[in-house]
Length: 120
Image 1 (cartoon, rainbow, N blue to C red):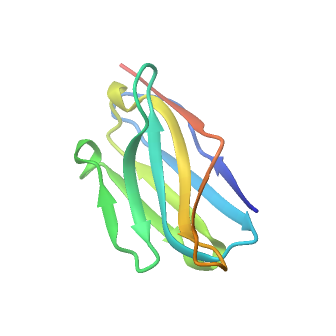
Image 2 (image 1 turned 30 degrees about the horizontal axis):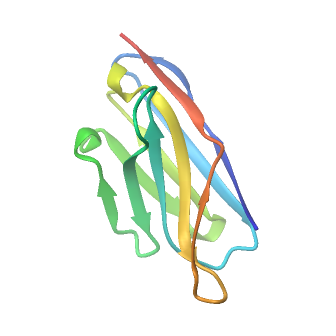
């Protein structure tokens, strides 16, 4: 079982910055990628950014140039630096860990979510 603990959300003004962290613990097998997703009220969950174990990154078009994802493989921790925040970034942000277990079966674990609110 894998536990994900997120931190760093909060209330920030338009143009401000926040840094989210997500630490994975427990019985962790091969992690293929870690990432962040978000869900705004009345909308579907959407990808924000992902990073592979080889540190290849992928971003949603709406956050490119403003958000930066990084990870510490030794600590199984993923970060999301969010700059130039806009009200439309307001959402619950979820951490995700995607990998293969000892049977080579794909798994996905999710954090509990952290609220990010950007005021105009």
